[in-house]
Length: 215
Ligand SMILES: Nc1ncnc2c1ncn2[C@@H]1O[C@H](COP(=O)(O)OP(=O)(O)OP(=O)(O)O)[C@@H](O)[C@H]1O
Ligand SMILES: [Mg+2]
Image 1 (cartoon, rainbow, N blue to C red):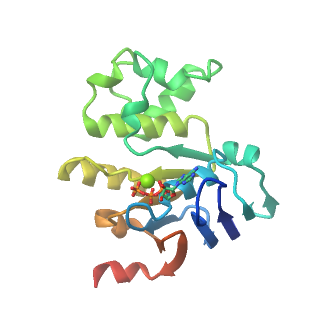
Image 2: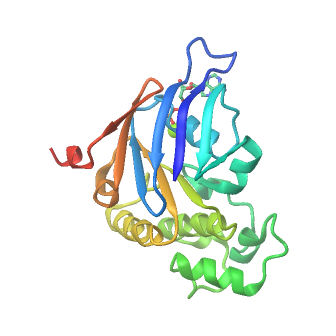
């Protein structure tokens, strides 16, 4: 179980807190969806959970373990919005091995299989993949590190309808092994696979019923 208690973020540069008193519980193998407008603090929340930004106050726990920012970097894998813009490997295998030269071909094959890209040649250039395939590769880059929690920032943004549906199906499948927390401004098809949901507004989070997306 991922538990956030009274989590706040108020960097000195900001006039008001960016995240205020966030409380959240997400059980393993569940998909949590945080929905909120632009500037509400969604990406900031994920950056804190990925250990990339330092919270001002509050507790983050995984099970009974209290986690510091360094431990969070191992617990969570963050897929940024438009992850394809951050690719820096010349080939699929280079992209997967970046920072992980120890990975063997079995690790690589398993990660690619997990996201349905195992039929591609490892020497394919990431920029030659389709938009949907690039999103899958970005997921594999995180999965290969075996994080406990996958954090996804607007995973369906900029994809056409059929690619979006394929990605949602893949995320539903990943739930069998991973715990997922997704932030988005538009729940869309993601609402169908969410187990729990929250609305975020001006840095404040409130739980909402998943069924409220259909009203
Ligand atoms: N380090 C920082 N210092 C000051 N302000 C910041 C900092 N980081 C983020 N902000 C501000 O915090 C607010 C939340 O930003 P964030 O990027 O988390 O929003 P978001 O919900 O992801 O928006 P979008 O949907 O547009 O991606 C914004 O007003 C942003 O300008
Ligand atoms: Mg954002």
